[in-house]
Each structure stands twice: as structure tokens, then as C-alpha cells.
Length: 191
Image 1 (spheres, rainbow, N blue to C red):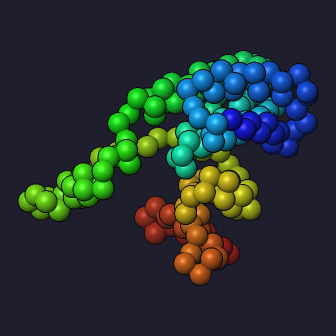
Image 2 (spheres, rainbow, N blue to C red):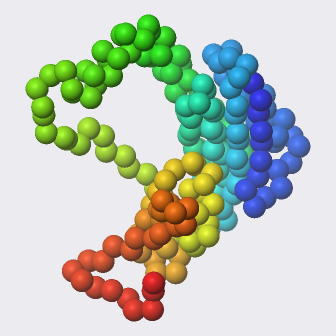
């Protein structure tokens, strides 16, 4: 497994890098050699001392990302928390039956069943709700974060307007921003 440890707007001491590599190595027994691990560390001084250090760990297993984030009073504490979380995800990932391990005919049958095309038509429904913390950032930071995650859209709080905004990638390769309004309220001067 290849492990990359990087700091976000911070220099990470060598002892912390070594600690991160040792902790991530613990997960290696669950995974194959083709897995990549990225550890990103940063601190925020405006938060309480108990959770001012952040660690985010991303594993890419057979093209599928496993990602988690934890906070702590030190980088080591944050790393302990995030490695525990991702280790649980890796165990779940390994134990889950995979459709790609089945013969092609079974894959097609299962896809049709999942699409609902082999049974009676049904109304689409909400099957998942995702909640996450967001923090104020500028549009350029949102673009960087969206690219880093590999998503086509990104929800954030604009540091300029202090309102929720949605950044999205347009089909022409450029970006767009959706700024919701409540009751027709709109601040002039924006695009």
C-alpha cells in the first residue's frame, strides 16, 4: 500500500508523518497492495483546543474511495480516531459481497433487479439522506475541494455572503454557482 502524508497549509513534523504511516500500516493487512492511502493533516486555531487538529484519511480500494475525518487535541489523537473509523469501513468493504465477482449473466440480472426494470414500475423515492458539516470558504477554495474529492458539485458556505452555495461543474468544463434565495430575497452585485 502506498501512503501519502501531506499538510494543508501547515508543515507536518517528521515524527507525525512517521506516526501516520505506522497507523495506516495497521489497515494494510485488510487490503491489497494496489490500495492508495492519503492522509491530510491541518489545524484550525479558532476552534477549541480539544478539536483543533484535523486528520482526513482517504483509501482508494479498487477505484472506490473510503474516506473519514477526525479531530483531536493533537495530530496523533486525530490520526488515532480517523484510522479507527476507516479500518471499520475497510472491514465492511471487504466483507460485503461484490457484484463484480459474479459471472456476467448474474451481473445483468442483478442490475435489472436494482434498476427495477424486471418488475412493476415504482415511484422514485429518497433512499439516503447525507448530513455533513460545512464551513465558510471562498469560491476558489470550494473549486479546489470539489476537484480534490472528484465530485461534480460541492455544497459550501460562501465566505463572502455567509450563505449556503452550490458549486457545480458545467458540461462545457467551466463552473457555476447556485445561491439559493429565501422568499425572493436577493443581494444585488452578484453574478
